[in-house]
Length: 294
Image (cartoon, rainbow, N blue to C red):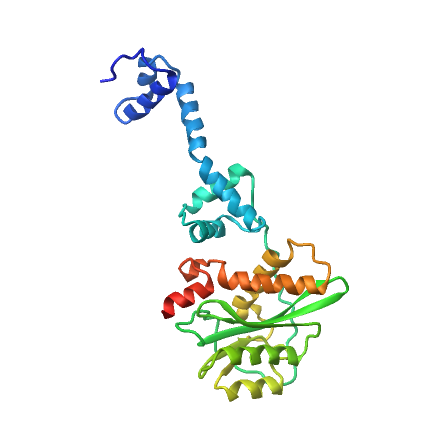
């Protein structure tokens, strides 16, 4: 069956042993071929490492391409979306551990916003149901801030829960009602029919203002608000801001407002067009929307 056992080098013998290992004990095969078991297992280990060489190179390439901010699950999505390579998430994790690379850990968000004690407060219509069956069914909105030196930059954004796309955003040095109103004016220009839309926010003073409550019903939108002091009611929007800062701001040395605004604009464009999401059939938001509507 094995032919002349004395012919061939050790590598050839190891390959033959591997093929026959399903039917015979390893120890007897090694004795038969006059090789050590430790040598055989070392051969398997070396060959396994060589087998992963291309996979490790690709994982490292994707990791470095995105500035080392992503963990194994998101890298798995980039491997499929950018390179057409589907790799088991456990394998991606193992290769990252072998390479000694890891993601940047997102900072824990503290629920420290101040609710308004004046103005109008609406009921919580969303009730933490962050799924939507079609565009313009459910939007979430909020404001976040980013410090540059001694100044603050404020970002107001709106996310469509159908595909998690940021459909409108505005930035300002002032955190006021006009920042929010400008964001919605931008959204109305892009979305023609929003009748029946639920727009969910926290109870910040901008969202309890009379101007805000006058603007939304005029286009047929319904206002929904988180319970007072409960940031989990708007967790989807909080999650986006966390990703924005961890992936698009904190890794960079940003020294002025222009630089911060540019990074935010670049990240939102990347998030909408290039960043695949597991909940969106492993597609970026805009690609998912085009595929579902086509």
